Length: 253
Image 1 (cartoon, one colour):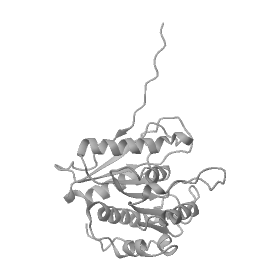
Image 2: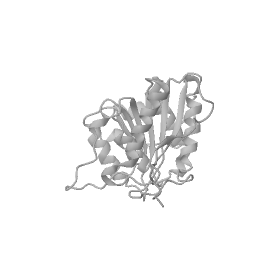
Image 3: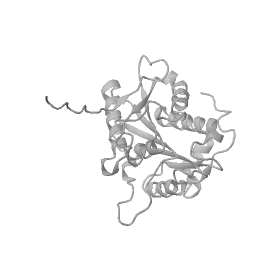
Image 4: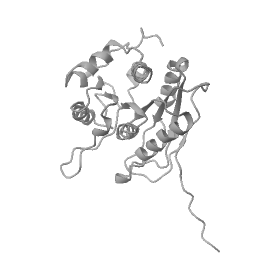
């Protein structure tokens, strides 16, 4: 009796969030969190509640512009060292957007380990902007290469992190942003004071900030004053910008 071949896993895009645009002029790829090491297949409930909330908010904000929003479903649950599986799947997803929709601008929005995947994949030729929410980034290690930043040149980058995050170190995302800012002025970082990894206390503000930033990056909408100030400010001011309570209440999308 012959051995049964192990099925090859493939990444895929989830169904477009909300009504599918008749003509797509931009795309957001949502990259859920993951683990540092795991060969297991992601669970259908692996994505945090933030992912569907983000998808709905972004789809609504970009509906008139023809925005397509998709969640990326990974092959594996883990980053897995040099394999960088989540980044490879994000790269595939950006290629798939080009195949489906043609030459449209892409914004990568990642959470946790998905934030690392978004930052790592920012150099894809279709990607013009990256949002990393509470990104997992490796510890500084003199024996290993630093997490790369050169791929983000020419991209607009937003990092958001809770100051009380006990799962992903906010100081590491600050150091990453500081290195990226040296070669790319279009990098900003917001701090959500006294909030944890899920940023539950400021969820509405984080959703509004992400939508405001993405609409500006994808379609040239005027961004809010705090985002404008954060992009223009020199380090460390623009990389430790506090996210104010109530942000977004006056924004109309």
